[in-house]
Image 1 (cartoon, helix red, strand yellow):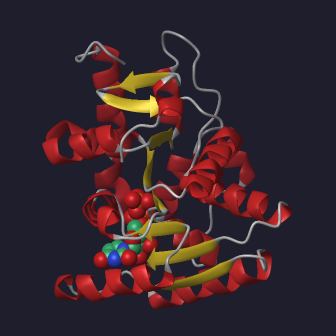
Image 2 (tube, protein in one colour):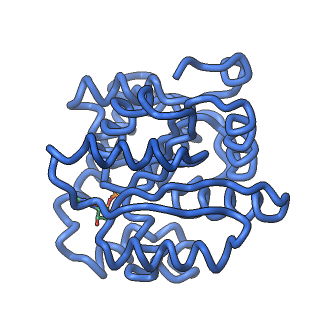
Length: 253
Ligand code: UDP
């Protein structure tokens, strides 16, 4: 996953030690399509404040974030932190929207992408695959759910390999999905792997995204908290993240 020359010249901004690329969603899509064209192995992380906070305590995850070819700001907290000194990040680039835009663009260009979806429950996965097939008939989709036993991982990866996807979407939750991609990508045929978290549930319609008003007001995190109060413990990462950025402990945000 060496950085290509085209990435080295690109603007990046560091937030608590995590290097974010300042591409818009459409630029990120173009980058991914270019990589697919080049038949290279690439890893994309969509990182919000929770992910940044996970890297603070996990050296292996920090290394993975450094090795990733594209890290997008998935969360208004990251956009805020990145823009504190200089306005460099114009928009959030969430996994849900990035992949939809990628598939729409491929469809418009009659570029037939092979996409493997790994993760979520069987119900969510099948609903997601059905929706994708209906919305993007020019592309080919396969996948399997994310509730396999650790000892079955080799067979899971063998099925990904046999499908030889252009795009491998992995939705097992962070940071497990990033660790899996990092370890497995080198052994797979060239593809662009994207960690997509709970996006498969959204594409499958089993989890609704926040209404537009919440998203416009940058309150998606509040909506998720209200819908799933059990997330409160995880979401404590948000104030901790803001506090750490304000104290500027690392001096690089
Ligand atoms: N998941 C999975 N296998 C597991 C545990 C979780 O496939 O063993 C899926 C889960 O069904 C959900 C996603 O991983 O679709 C995690 O979603 P969440 O919103 O918690 O992740 P985040 O986007 O916050 O990383």
